[in-house]
Image 1 (cartoon, rainbow over the protein chains, first blue to last red):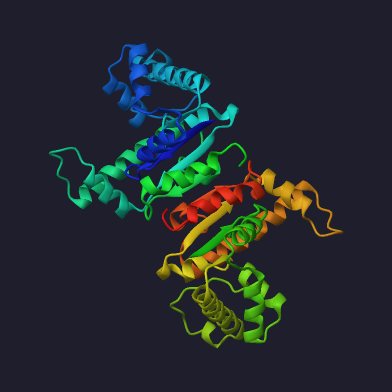
Image 2: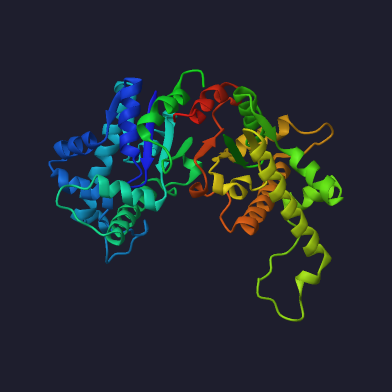
Length: 201
Length: 201
């Protein structure tokens, strides 16, 4: 059993994934993937995080002219090697044991073994409130600034997902279950939600 | 507890709704709504069905010129009275007892009492296959014809929903749970899914 979780920033998707893995007593992977990529590529974790969350390399057509050859561009090569390691690591994790994997296009990377694909989202007001509650000490943002931050992070995720998979991020077609966390307490929800992943359902 | 179910044609949303109501032992409303509208408006059931599924009246701006006044148009008035009865009946049903209501913009009509809002969908191939399996005797359509039929019905539903609610039909923001039935057996799924509607979740 492999469960992949895509999520809007601030929707509680990571908490849901962690609690689900705990409840089902299976492995949980999230930031571990970035650490592992960093280790294997000798890039810093921060750098890898930037690549996989924000996709810094501009989109460009596959058919390329003479004047601009991304193959020879070091930035392009780094991005490509991060992609390659990410794919490799996620496949290894899924092969090792049952697990929950948050983010990283795992739904797409593992598509051949048909994981359960979950997408977690919430109304923007609920996400702003959640982000305020969980803000690192010293971060003081207005609601408006928080909303901008959330939208900007999600824009990066959408762009990365679309570049990597060719599909629209958050489009219901790409998931088995989509969960709106606006009106639920994730802690109470998870034991019920876990039923959907039983063998016979 | 009120559960509203929107659904793509052929996704098994109606079966899911019926089984869920059975399992939870609560009322189930679907075609009953149309019968009741027909009774109250003295229109035929077939006619009402056409209004609520296909929305025959063309969209028009609210601010209207002199030359085209829909208020005086009998088609417009009939559509309006169907809308009004639909709203009234669905509110009565929800007030009477716990229930599952399929279609008819019930999620929107009941928005103030915060029902559980479910949307059921599936891949087009799964829907074509399901529709073939459930076709009325004598209906022999090719896959291509079935696909056209499905898309045309869903187009009508989307148009109706958008006209009535001002929101996009099937947009995840309008629902609490979205369920992809492509890879599940609805009969086996429902007992697990029912857990999500327990009081404490």
